Image (tube, rainbow, N blue to C red):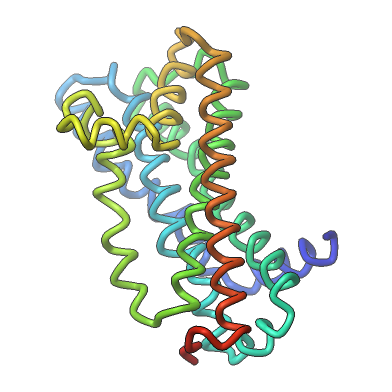
Length: 251
């Protein structure tokens, strides 16, 4: 396990493009914070920073972390790696988690930009809980990236799916509109989506008012664990199908 983690960390250090999220998302936030300051809406600054972090973490997972398989394909190491599917699954899961975790420091960057650069009244009343929820959400989006990696093994055109996995899920996660404004069928889907639970719990943790904390935290943990189980199961099935010759591997 330590060998895998060390190898993946070295791979990350050789891929500076994976750190783009740390720079791009704070730059986007300059627009949001500038708008809030000019329109005297500083009370929304904390919520804006948290929402920008969640959007950044999700897009980072979908567009960057899920491309581990494409990187292996381009380097010609995908086919040999699939000869040992169990080891490859472990390596892929750790790689995805480490890459996705690079989005976590963005939360601190956004809060500091809003506070120090724009002087907005950003405050986090429960920083420990906020960090815990942010870490859980990051684990959930890493599991989503792992699921996407399974699709990357099967088809080369999976990049088109990446574009479809952004704004619809921002809506289901309550990042653009409250989920109560969604049509009833979508509202039920959103209530079973870990991102909607994490987003609301993150906002409440920042304000210090967190009703039913235990139950909501347990629900978030369960949904993240379910997402991880689905991601692992899907990739394991894909690897088994490829190794058994039931599907064609696109090199």
